[in-house]
Image (cartoon, rainbow, N blue to C red):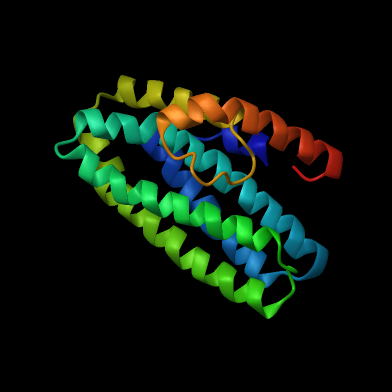
Length: 186
């Protein structure tokens, strides 16, 4: 999945909106599957959510704080939502993918994540597209792709700021990618 994630549009807004669509599709695919296919779809979903949120936390949210009027107030609820999603993903990892509890919790997480994505698109992405030049948006897109290439592949609640991602992210990414290689799930 990581390879296809990196082959997306160059503009950061287009890139992240495209990933929001991929995330929605992966939620649907995971919920529709069972057994091994459900487990594999969930792992793919978890990985995309982890790298996607890292890119937003490292690249987009800090820029919104600096460039958009009242940027801190716009970003703060998104960071809280991202933190909550990471906690919920971590809880889902411990459940049997074919259990009713997993299905119900995954459906609730899907609804929360899709609402979160709509807020980002309306309150952050649209405003960035209005405020920044095409060149700046493309530079941010390249930075987001780079951030994703070295991002943790699993949720890490408490690592939702640019600073926390830059300090803890490389170590977490190394451990996640090693764990993924050992268990053959990445």
